[in-house]
Image (cartoon, rainbow, N blue to C red; front, side, top):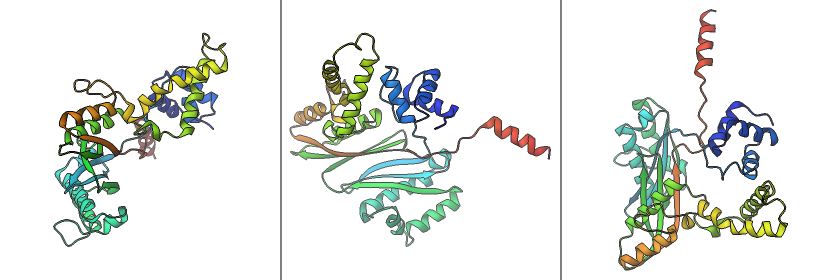
Amino acid sequence: MAFTALDVKKLREMTNVGMMDCKKALEATDGDMEKAVEWLREKGLAKAAKKADRIAAEGIAYAAVIDGIGVIIEVNAETDFASKTDAFKDLVVNLATVVATDAPADVEALKACTYPGTNLTVTEIMQEKVMSIGENMQIRRFDRFATNTSVAYVHMGGSHGVLVNLAVEGDIDATEIGKNVAMQIAAMGAKYWDKSMVPQADVDKEMAIQVAMMDNDPKMANKPAEVKEKIAAGKMNAFFKEMCLLQQEFVRADLFKGDVAGYIADAAKKLGGKVTFVDAIHYIKGEGIEKKEENFADEVAAQIANAGK
């Protein structure tokens, strides 16, 4: 599999490793990005890769609690300018209301629902908005929590939307707890909510990487295989603390020193009740949407060439 300079750049962004080492990794793995990340980790050059390959599109990731129903939705536009207009923001809020009240099964069902305050469908309103704003707009995804206690958080005007679902016991207000957990999710980007959710295949893969790192370490290479495996198993706690929300170090150390699970239990106890984390949904605006790469120099050269014809 061939690779390009853009692939090297992408791998560097994912791992914070130097360009030359990224190039070597791609050469060693025949251009396979995932295997290149593992190669760099085995050499002790990189930590677990962040999702730096998620290329942002414009729009809003929005979350809200409407009449007790937790709603999260992402609506995309072509430019950041359009997504910051009041007309676009109002559209997203009203679409969230439809999701809460009508509980559509999917995006197509949502488009067939009646838009608030009108006799028109969501599709018809979207068409009007496209004409008035002058950009293509798409409802990308949505979800909802109809049970338990939901808390919504929107980061940086819609770059992240987070919806946290909690089971609350006792007559307490868990809003602050939910918001702090949602902020943790937006800031730290956990891959799993709890270590019990990590597939065994991922645990085995991480163990193998840890052993390979020791194989490449002159100080550890000659140790017996069983010793390396025990050391690798001991390092899995660090893996869980990075990848799993409830095992992560709580970022608001001013409120609680410990992991997120400990923060939730402590904060609920102080309020005189009990709170259990049930689930959460995290939308990142434009997550996974590939935007066209523009090369300004090539574009100018092409225009000059065409001008001479």
